[in-house]
Image 1 (cartoon, helix red, strand yellow):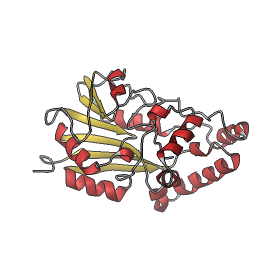
Image 2: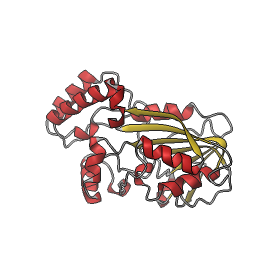
Image 3: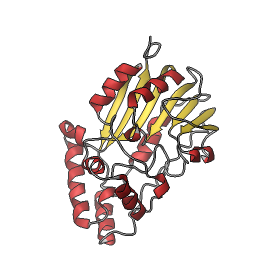
Length: 266
């Protein structure tokens, strides 16, 4: 399922991508296939970390929107930013070691002053939003003019996310437990802001403009249950990454939105 694991960014850092779960059928064969096709693989988490760091400057204030407990996908940017605040509905955010301060709050109703942050980071959050426009309007309010909203989220038109939309949360919980993911970190997915057209429309209505938009297909980690399925996933990855016209079918979206004007009400 197109990562229903968290409301936001927590996970493996550079060089520590997801490992094959222990429940796989023919797991050793899959590891050989993976080693053959992806001998020097750079995963999407490493790429997004580099993406985020390219926008950071010393002394900046950063908001991790949907920071969660910070164990699966830690950004580790406190060495650059002077402030790394975190907001999440999950009280576990108060224990996030990567933050300078944290609040339990709805992202559509944040307890911050206007223009409080230079950069907002949102990783694996947008697929869970019930009201994406209200959330983006609020994120724009707390972002300084010219600031950046950096988003990493699954594409709603990928086969994994289509499967996720067709299955209940209890199945996601079961599936993730077999992938050695905590049930406490599995949340309902909605995919109401998970394609380029929708994100562009939301940006226009909330005071943003899309500055960068990249879609990437990753190795087929969700198909580790079968070597046959995994090989099919490798073939899919090769095809959609080769042809630009198929970019809308790639699984991971990396997006930079720039705050423009005075906000949505300007």
